[in-house]
Image 1 (cartoon, helix red, strand yellow):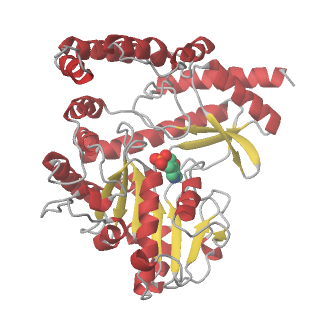
Image 2: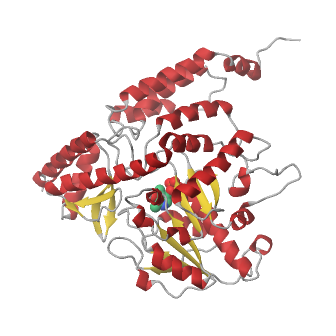
Length: 468
Ligand SMILES: *Cc1c(COP(=O)(O)O)cnc(C)c1O
């Protein structure tokens, strides 16, 4: 027989080549040692370097060393330095070192977290983290957790569980009958809701036009007085941490009423829910444990590496009824089978990083981290105020919205800040006006980083003023 090296022969050989993995480690160390000084957003040269990736699919197998080299030479410089200390865009968080290292190891395991039978280690870590998180947040004891890619998916799961449970209590089995003849539900959303809520509602067949939108107060939290009477057909969505201002809804008042009415309350707590674990800030989340489901990210405030989100649901069965599936080859066990709690079947064992993050922080570490982000956001806001910026929100947690009082000036200053590449912030509209939006959400940020960033803000302001 003709001897020809097949692709699997090559790959088997590469799997034993430890130098390849040493090379990857070397590049990673190189990246880590430079990231604090790298431009926070890639410069033009780095962006131009991305053209190297725009090529036709190779006809023949590539050399793994060249693949890594391409990534490091052309990819690393084109990353956003969100693991550095001066990235304040969106709400992105950092990566706890033990969790990153754990991710390297568990990537090597390449586990599929679908079933206990496919990965006992993933199943056990999910079981353990579920308990840890429920106790950390002070939620009801049997609260179930599903481990998903982020809050978008978590919200989708929570709202599906809520929709199905409300309909089931009205005598309608949506799993069987679909939405075709379902009793009408009333969906109540605050005007400040995150766009992922609208996306989830539209995916699960509740659309957008018939939602009851409740005005938000100036701080972005839902106006309690404007919430209409609720009943047992009501799906209410609240939030712990408005994506711009960081404001929290009044859970204590609203959830109490909702429970009496038989409504289902879902809380979008993507980054803010972790304040429930802080002694100093838990007042923001008072009463949040009275809700029915919660979505939260580990990859934001908690600083777990991407991607890591959690759906929590008071009624375990409501969640698994909404997400379960069956097939003759799917064998559920007496242990935790992760796929019962998520829309996915095959799924990477992201629980390893979450476990490592929680283990590395401990209860006191989570609380300290949350409070530290808050203190630094307050410091950032004060420094900016002392330098002629207007802070538009109450910095109740980690979000700061600033303006220069004039829309054009504010936009120009934001451009200046983004072009500086010393720090990076995004923009938003707040109560009709453009603002510069700062999110302090990484353990990497120091007070010196904030001082340096404030200097950049001051320069950008001077330029904006001179340009007018
Ligand atoms: C980030 C965010 C989301 C979306 O979370 P992903 O993890 O990006 O899917 C939803 N709601 C709020 C308030 C957020 O900050």
